[in-house]
Structures are given as structure tokens and as C-alpha cells.
Length: 275
Image (tube, rainbow, N blue to C red; front, side, top):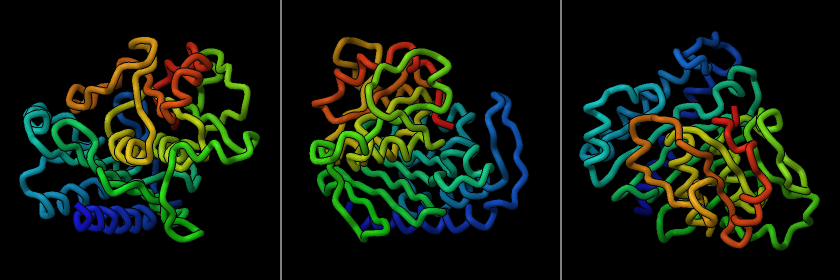
């Protein structure tokens, strides 16, 4: 897995180079659900699908721009290993020339997040993890191990809850500290893995979470549904492989803070994504 994780990191970084060729020079388009898309999304996903098929021919690949093939979805649900890619998470940020978009590659094994890479090409930062190997962040201070509980050692005024961009219009967020939105769901959740965010919530699709979930969990965090029980229900990842929007928001946080944060969010959790 260590070698394969390095392969996934290299692929995400190469995909990020492709995205950067289009950055600031691509026309926005609109998908049927009115969410933004661009030629960059399609080119990056095509590149990732081709390279991942060569890396592991037995593992199907599902992604944001090609999730409408029912037969492919059923193959993915039956497979032991499945790659889940988001070619550009935060397309609106990408089109608006905000540097917070990412390239995401997740690996599910037996229906559970096993490895993930979230690469932010405009920022030169990469988050990665594989089950049993820990989670890491490569950024301006070199490579550091991630710990979702490291918020304990931080000044509370510098940590934040990460939320979808319009959540303040949908309901009350009772968190007493700062609430931020950076326009990229995967970035929100890996910042929780880093301990910079105390929690992140979003109601979105599998490709926004699969890579970040592997990183968050390996850093000691949890990702659970907000309204499926007092302590939150686990995510059924196979259920989401057809690209459906999750039936409820997911909250990612360290286990020691999950219940507290769930009680702060209320109806604001109905919004679908960060972007």
C-alpha cells in the first residue's frame, strides 16, 4: 500500500498540473443540476481514469463527470476495490480563480475508505493517507503527520468550524467560534484531519468525501451522518456510488467533539456542498 499511495500522490499531482493549464483560461459551463463544470473537469477525470486503470485494472473507477453509467455503478458496488475521483473539487472556486480547489483520488476497499489523496495544485499542498500508515500533509513546512485531535493544543480563537457557503441562509449554526467556508468540501474535511478545523459538515456526493474520509479517519477523526441517531450513523459508501446526493449531511470531527458540534449545527446542515 505504501508504494501504491506514492503512485496515487504522483497521479494527483500530475492531474493538478493539467488543471493548472486551464486555470484562469477556461469558460464555465453548467450541468443539468445547474452546478458548474468546465473542460478542465473532463480532461482531468479522463486522465485519472486512464492512469488508474493501468495502475489497477481490477478496480473500477467512478467519478463526478462519468457517474451516469448504471452498469459501471453496479460493477463498482460488487468490486472489492474501487477508485473514486473528483477531478476538480471546488469547481466554482476554480472558475472564480480562488486557489482552494483540489484534485481528489480515493480508494475504497470492501466498501470502506482505505486510501486517499487530496492535492491542492494552486497552493502546492498535498494531503494523503492509507489505512494503517497514518495521514500526512505536505505543505510549506515540509511533510507533517496529521492528528485530528491536535485542536486541543491550539488557541481556540484560531480554530474554526467549516461549513457550506450558504449554510448561514439555511438555518442557525450555534457554534461559538469562527465558521468558515473555503469553497472546497474535501479541503474542509482534511483541515479537520489537521486539527485546524474542529469539524466540517456538508451534504454532497461520494467523490467529495471518499479521499478526504480516508485521510480524516486515519488521522483519528470520524465521519457520520448528522440526523441518523444521537451519535450519528456510519456512512454506507456503496449506497452512494451511483452519485446520489447523501440523504443527510455528514459531519467530520474528532470523536471527542462530534456530539457537541452536531448539537450546534441544526437546520443549517441541509445545504448540499461547500461550493
